[in-house]
Amino acid sequence: MTRGINQQVELWKKFMETQMFSWKRKALKNMVLSDGRKIKKGEEFSVPVQGALRPIELWEYVFPEECLPEVLAMLNVPASGHREELPKPAEFALRKILKAKKIKPYTPPAQKRFIADAGVGVYLIGTKEDVKQKWEELGVEQEML
Image (cartoon, rainbow, N blue to C red; front, side, top):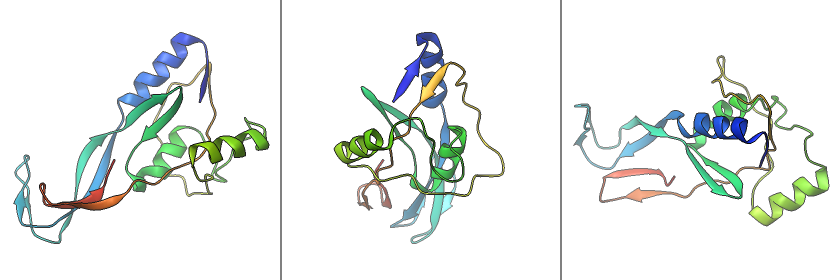
């Protein structure tokens, strides 16, 4: 959920929309990636993927699960996993409605990404896990962003 001066919210949205992450996959067959890397069956490899900012009047930000500490740090969430922006009953109700989980304590990365957030209130509600499955057509097992 965001609240702020529109131009600052729009700048924040652009930063969120342009972040790239390293996405882990597991090869179900031998393959050659578009960058020329040869990957063997069973080998884990990473490819770049853009974070997806999905508006539903509230914001849902989609990224690889293993990048959660990076995202929390770039949103200035303390290591405790909680900020006191929303009253606890409202936060609990929103999490329940959205079927989200409480943000747990985490270990921040050594270096954090910069997101311009001056004049923007970002209210974190919780996290949701994506389904992980095999995508036979592509020959990978992955988180289904």
